[in-house]
Length: 104
Image (cartoon, rainbow, N blue to C red; front, top):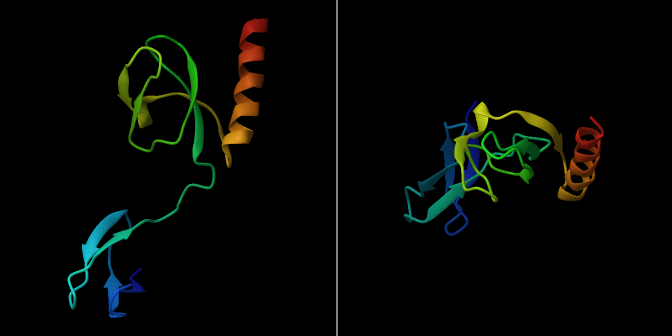
């Protein structure tokens, strides 16, 4: 589905044919334009590091690097415990998940 955007510098209409985040140059003035598509309604994910087991809130889409042990892995390989629209909501969910895990 092609989309039409306007160059912020010269107002030239530009037809987009991509459906992913990218950077394009205006064909008329050459201005670099960053294109971002918001597709995830719940961008904050609660994941567990497969190496050290710590739960964390991340907003990454491609790779995950653990804040505790430094382990790096692709996001699609991780188990996602929950997701949330806001960081506050994610913080509340991670506390509930940790409470449930400690009960077992």
